[in-house]
Image (cartoon, rainbow, N blue to C red; front, side, top):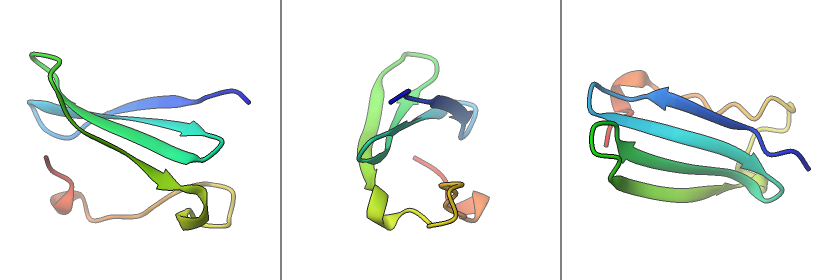
Length: 65
């Protein structure tokens, strides 16, 4: 299975890297300046929407680390 990775900016200092895998979606946040890891985890495939898009909606003002 091909693993897809995407990187998004959360703020001027922090970013998140998201990668799809056979178990669901893994994520890791880090400091963009120092590269220091902040948080990481896994969203289980059973908790992802069934539409095949694997999109989890959220309010942007709530995305912070």
